[in-house]
Length: 245
Ligand code: ADP
Picture 1 (cartoon, helix red, strand yellow):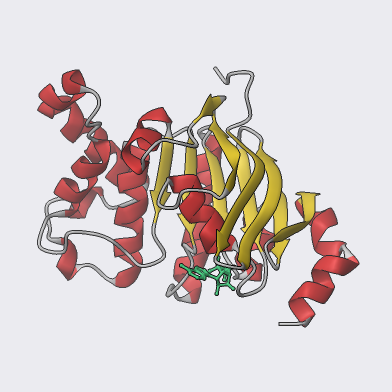
Picture 2 (cartoon, rainbow, N blue to C red):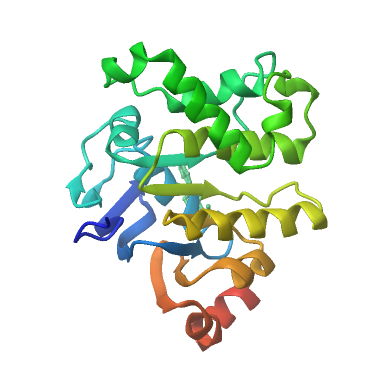
């Protein structure tokens, strides 16, 4: 059952690179369930925010809570244990390994020796994740033989196998053709139907319009809009920020 906390809370989050305020004291919350999109023009601070959320960067200021737990000082693997899953803009799979073995890597929790010992349960969880994305028949093939779109699905399966509370998707539509984008949209809907919360970062506005329930918009490192997707996309400041690109 969902807890009382939002899936994610970001408070006063900032990251400065020298004099540049890449992320300039932003606040937003991701409620449980559904798809929340973080959007903004090039250079607005989306990738920096994602790297702060996943623990790759140490913030200059601010706090990050996942499922009510303050994770601000935790390294990436510890955030995974709290319930954060992610995919990368540039696919990060072991190409010579099978799809199944790649997904098992995601199902393992280094902090949970009991989970590690039960190899059968891990494999079952990994196969279920591959079935969820429609790749159960290819579980035992090396990822190097997969199309780019299928490699993206393996990445999503790997993140799902960790049973995340919050799944961060970094430009999941990048490099996909039109029919793969349609399939991705359907997959996102099936994930949220299972109760998963998704935070998506993308500048593909067609995808964002199709899947986002709520949107936070960044521009020059500041939050310029936040809330219901349809209302946010009508805001003059948001339209102006995109026209200025
Ligand atoms: P977006 O993902 O929205 O395109 P980024 O988060 O990548 O934006 O970048 C925000 C700003 O921070 C840009 O001006 C970018 O040049 C700068 N920036 C990003 N990463 C670094 C870094 N490691 N060092 C210095 N400046 C950076």
